[in-house]
Image 1: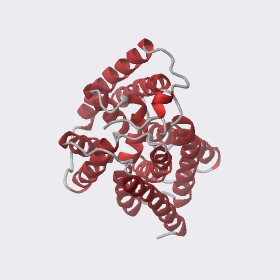
Image 2 (image 1 turned 90 degrees about the vertical axis):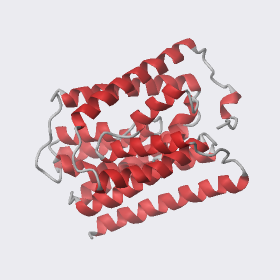
Image 3 (image 1 turned 60 degrees about the horizontal axis):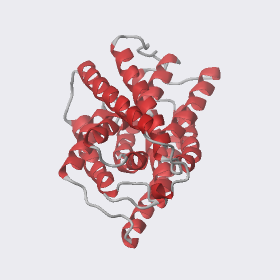
Length: 300
């Protein structure tokens, strides 16, 4: 194993140690209230199954949450980052081990995403519900458009390189900084990162360890701040954690072939409906800036 990959695993381990320490502290203090329902476990299994296949987990999970009306919108970003974190960690171990992408590119993009998350989480966890609804509604529409464009062949399939240099390296690292910050608003990193790397000529397989590694470091960094601010639906987050690990294992080691194009069409339809639903709610909601009720612990 290269020194860059070893350093990446050390950083991810430290970030996750801090995350789990904060979660257990919330349990001991009584802040972590709520148990996962069977539906939460199922959601985690299905969405992280899709995540392992490269479709992503944030947009499908948000769409499902909007359908069932729970958890509340302002808790969704924190729930996504905390709940999908363990699955992202497992994906990273799998992809980084078996796919030989340039370790310098891998580490640089992961670190830039983490830096963006650290800046973004502190901002997003203080936003009012209406602002989060607008941000996530637009993000879901962009995700749906990405799925459709991918199926129609509008995005390049990617090149053959397993490394980037020069200006391409700089663009990739800078873009991942932005994507890391957007994850704190519940906007998944997989689709925009994969598209960016394809446009820059990276081999499609090379994107997987980068995407997984970025999420494995970004999500605990962002989620730790959401946990401290009690902006997480604890029961659903635990359900995503347990179900998500099972979903990753099934996708990585059991399922060999799936009609990914059909899955993308289905996800695009569901995500589009959820996006318009969220934007409709935001349009009907009055501005709530400064509303202290949004900072109060929420029921699960």
